[in-house]
Length: 526
Image (tube, rainbow, N blue to C red; front, top):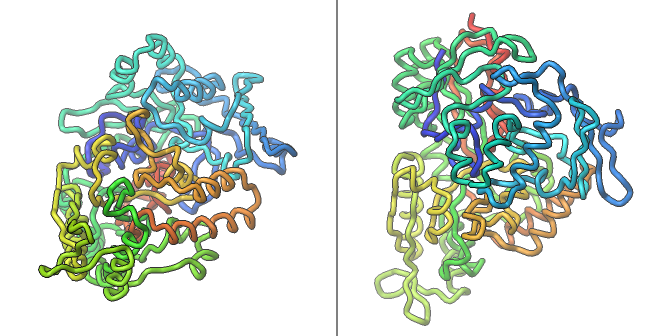
């Protein structure tokens, strides 16, 4: 069967950050984590025999705030080259990414785990320097598992470029998942074959081809032609999803699901003097009619975003009624601009006392039609309050480049997950991409708020749900008080699944912790 997503990744391994958004869809076919979110948001064991818990003594929170977590690993898991998976692979994966000479993204486990003990080949004891209430969520986004027997000899060379240019990091991946990567074709499609020794049993479906296509239109065309049976996450745009719903689902071929996932926002970095004043950022937001965008572009199916929390995550319901919201109000926008020292000039463009004009450069990927439509709408709203907008649309390779994204100081459209587990790395100042960390970091908004950092630090140490919700409410308040980005909406993500493909479902949220393909070993073709 054929699965399709948009974009082209260099390899399976997500070593330098999420440079290709559909990598979780690819790697879930051929690799496995210690634990995983299922399609209903439950945390389930995968390489682990069970998820650590306080009740069975495998998760111990000490009086001083440190933790000890014991992972019991499955004894029958094997790498695709036949080598057994052991606890040494887990510890090595932690050590490897902690090498500061490598341009790798470090997650909380890398910075907050001080040691790993290996009582035997199938037990890992992690020692945490602080309490982390989500430490039992150990997806491939949190701790990517590397085969020590392959990567350690590469690591011994001490040369980052040489290590990361090895075939393992490109097209010769060796994993632990239900399918093994047999071939990476010249057209960038990937051929996966069932792995006979998969520890949960041989998959029921034979060959799976992951097609990396250049556009949503290409996926829609193949879906309607019957040559693609699943449009996975990061595949169809909303518009093409509605076409598939009308024509493909309408013909009884399958079902198109729409799930509110990633928070879509506009980056307005404080390093740009135009955006430094929070009143300016708030004025830019209230000048945008997000309800009209939802009605016009998404047929009312999108959910307007007001903070950094996700509707399906803890804390959202408690925070929503108490945070400050910024509905469309051009007069309020002009008042905020005036408070910040900006007034409309004779030509209608905002100017300040120094004679500077409020002109912004707005960038989206030239391949993202949906973002371009939003760009046009936003530019029109901004023109109504005196902001002059210059479009600067670039190739996807530039738009997704970590360095280009970090150095660009104009307005940029950015999506991304808002799971609680991802909040720290998305918004804490230590994750701001900078030259000294080779521009690797998920805080692409460059938000450096001490109050937010303090709350995010506290969130990492909070264990009980009521305490967590209190911190999340305060974090949402801090966010809306400062408005480091302009939140637009939660993307209604279309996922198309053929009627004959059983046990396949859309993911419940975005970020690298979720994928539609993690359950491929359960799929059946009927």
